Length: 271
Picture 1 (cartoon, rainbow, N blue to C red):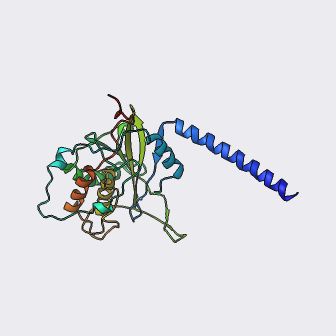
Picture 2 (cartoon, one colour; picture 1 turned 30 degrees about the vertical axis):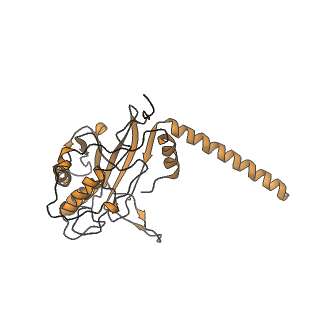
Picture 3 (cartoon, helix red, strand yellow; picture 1 turned 90 degrees about the horizontal axis):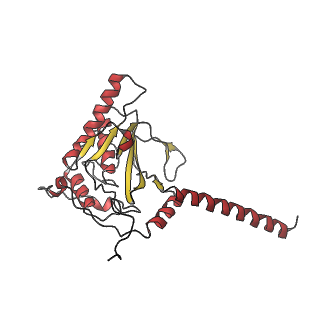
């Protein structure tokens, strides 16, 4: 077979593959549901945005109104740090839709009871998780619900997938992982979170993992460099409670613009 014929066959194959990819992409866009998984690189858990999802989302958001800030919830508006502890807002990552801010309150939280343990153990696990979660209710309105289908944040006792560390081929276990999905409802861009907590976590470390991951789910999409903050990037021997720096950072996040919670229809040019 001559080189010319080989090139012709190769070009035909490339064309066929491209056509199938375009068809699959069109079907994906047509669903109206955007799935974005983020995995925060730490001993807890940031995942990489798939390029095709990110591209589709940019196309869909190109005609939407620009990001805008929401009014601060009263609990955060009233927060004052008398110690001037500072924050780690510079470590918070913005996303393709702006900052991950909740605008409808209370935020609905569902903790899935574990099924592979006794009822007593399952209740003890749920209680420990709720202890870490409800510490945040001082700063943002939360409600614990029993209906998983309407939850904004779902917490599950499940081992996060193994992660390959940068520069290494050795898979590494994580104690927790937080991911989010974007979706539209009545032409308003919304999001929901899923938190996985490893079954190996117990006692105060389970409470700390729930506290840490829930901070991500409330909008702190980044880590603190200080061990005295709940959002420190790694587990520590004596897990700290929510710090003033954590709350200062959360408040600054909620002062930022976002596309979440706003209509995807740009009405700026309508009289």
